Image (cartoon, rainbow, N blue to C red; front, side, top):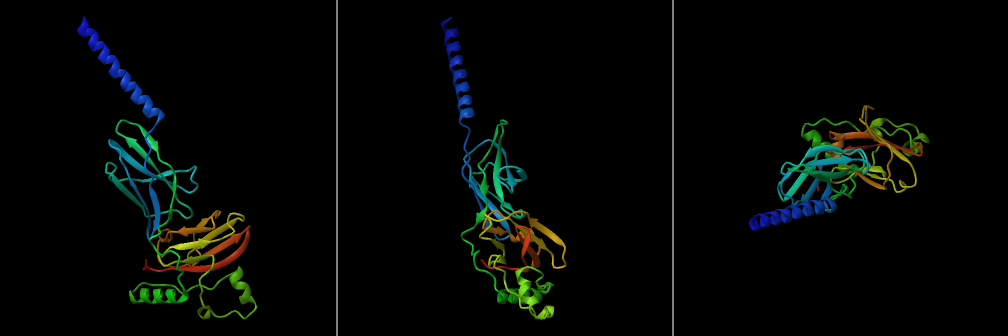
Length: 262
């Protein structure tokens, strides 16, 4: 009888400990370590250190608004490793926000905090490509046998107001210069610099040289934004149009080199 009582007591204690452990986990779910999302050349790289075990999968989710419309874009190939990484080779135009969905073998899951992709500080992303840089890049592309188009003339906006005062020059005589709003940097990415973005409504559109629509950013909310070069799918010239509160601010073009320097 005493032996049965002891077994009963041990069983009750064990069950109580299990229930307490489950309740503690429910009240205090595991906190996933902070992860980084760095805008690099050709990708946005996510890196983190995980101390979890019995992980079934880690899904990478992405959104443009940081609150809604998160979509799973891929999975970590080594979810059980301590050090993990994921490369987003096709980021979206605009701000890219990421979060992880961790699923354990027992069926439990949770989401990490949301992280905004920011420029990699180890890469030179501030040096604007000049007309000389673009000329050299075009010459290098031609030497490599890669076809390039000439810069199309500016149409509309501030870039053409000065031209209207003079006779329209031939296309090949137009001297190209980088825009102060949208320009390529030494890492090959495209920067959008609109200091008044928080107070005004900017709408940016990008086109192929032949006028084919590529993509747009319906509202630029940040004064500084980086578009990863992979978004443009290929090197060469691209036209853009900036609308400020519904009016054309600038129509110009930007060149993305085939190669780049860090």
